[in-house]
Image (cartoon, rainbow over all chains, first blue to last red; front, side, top):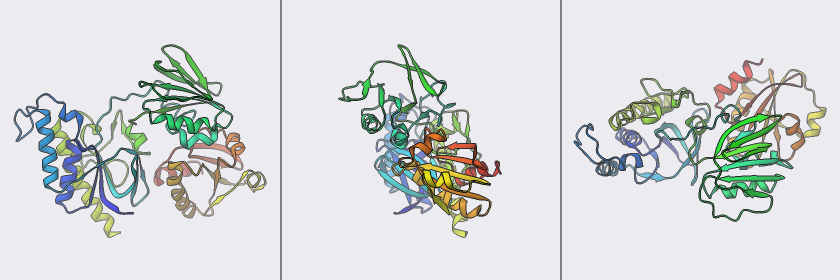
Length: 288
Length: 103
């Protein structure tokens, strides 16, 4: 497998600037995200304080960013990252479309509006899980509740149901599937909180309460500390120093994910710093 | 070296000292990534800590005996008694800290 010098996750201003800077410094770059840059940029009405682009609309800014990246030979790989594992002297990236390896990683995935349910983080690994296929073996003869956010999750529910005694599936999207057998589908209920009572994972919703041996929450977007196991957070943001370095050697973060102010020019500036820090890290790594 | 064990081997083996058991499954992505990390730690800590791996699919009762609900789960035993547990992938320095603080 090709091992890239730098993998950049995110195609907003932070990620694009990081990829461009890495390219300028002659590094091999894997840029993962959306070919259309970031929705947060393209949907912006007007931006007044981006140097060199006065009163630009979000759409024009997005185009300017992508044109610049293209001109520098930066290619965007349209893929979604599920997890980044720090393996010592390299990182393993598990994505929807396949697996990749890189010597260093720049996290520029932005801020998601996702908020964990009360009780979710406290019981993670102790009845609450994000990976139904991982834990299926442990649910032989047991019961499980799944909170799902996309039709793709139906496959995971079926995999789990092959082993579990019964599964309650709570789709948080317009459900049109055909799940059956030992899977009970309960659409249109909103989960509110989770607690563990007598070894049972109890999910309270706006309608009813669901009790099972375990709860699986299958969100499209996961918190940065879930995306990169072992990552130190500062509240909802990734903790970084002035060099955009995180607590994991070789892993840098930039843009909205590191905290406020949520400004495009700040994100781009941090992307530049993160890439240069990664370049220094690679030089140190090569000496070893 | 991390030694793969099953239910019977666990029951009959010598459990004195500190042991680390990695509960995993073949189809679990994070488990696959954690395996080489544990392998390295087992070399670093050779003579101090015994490392074992258990396939939860083949040994569901052993997993349930230790209250494993999610994997990968690393269980730390002192003389056969569970003293701590870590769930999910963790980078090598963090996993080393987790083991060392229990030594």
